Structure formats: structure tokens, C-alpha cells
Figure (cartoon, rainbow, N blue to C red):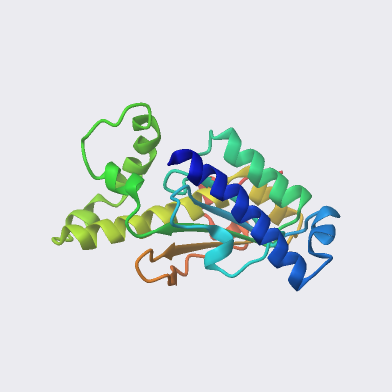
Length: 212
């Protein structure tokens, strides 16, 4: 059964290639010449949230980084490397942090359960709860509290992006770079714009502003 599923993936690829070539015989040749995507997407690793598909983007249009609960952890060299390449080499103009309702990582951060090594990652999400504890604890309905926690987590990650030296240095060089926060509804397919946007360093509290 598992081997059949695995083989089907390869067959799906062949069918996809044939379809793309039928639409545009030069499709893959154009991709072969390099990439210049306008968007960096920082999303959750959840299999239900495929970045390109939910925004109708083609291959080559979105540079993607995904991890558990779409986190921007300042010591995460994987995320920082992707961000640095996207901003300084690809010159993306937009960075989108996209969370999603029903996120397992955010849900886990609302409990005291231990899940193994991932506890170290979830701790960063728990910090977001601590920052917003008064608001979240005031929401009596657990499902609504969960949804709001997802939103607040995205907002904090956008703010943490703006605090990075990579982003602030780009702004200092007058590079056009906008940061956005979205939440995707897995059950509806609709994206909610949280309207948390940064496009310059002076939008940050003074203590976070870096001098270059």
C-alpha cells in the first residue's frame, strides 16, 4: 500500500510536467534561467497550508521557509539564512508571515504537556502567550482563545522580523521591503490580513532600532 502511494507520487509528477508543457512548452526552460520572486513566505510546516497553491502563485514567484508554527526565532540560523538570501540576493519586496487557524504547535503551547524535543521550540510560542496573557486569559471560550493566540503569534513574528539586522539594514539602504502578517483558514480557504505591517525601522520601539 505504502509503495503504491510512493509510486503514485512519481506518476503525479509526470502528469504535472505534461500538463505544464501542454500549457507552455517553455515553462521549465524559463524556470531554469533563475529566480526573482517578489515574495518571501514564512509559514507553518503544516501539510494543509501549501504556500503557492493558496495564493495562486506559480513556481518561481514565492521563496518559501516553513517551520512549526511559522516562528521567527532570532537564533534560528536556518530562518536567518533564508531571510538573508531572500532580502539581500533575491531582493524580495514583501515578506509574509502566514499562520493558520487550528495550528498544532500553537495548540500545544496552550497546554503543559511534554511532546519531546519539540518542547524546546514550543517554548518560544509559550513566550507569546506570556506577552499577551491578560488578553488571552480574558477570553472565556477556549476555541476563540486559540484563534486569537494564532493571530497574536503571527503578529509577534512579524515584529520579530522587523527587529532583525537583515531587515533593518535593508531599510537603512532604502530598499523597498514590506512585512505582513496573515492567517489562513484551513476550513474556509480564506486568508485574513491581520493588518500588521512594517516598512521602515522607525516603526519599531527605539530600543530595537539598530545603527549601521
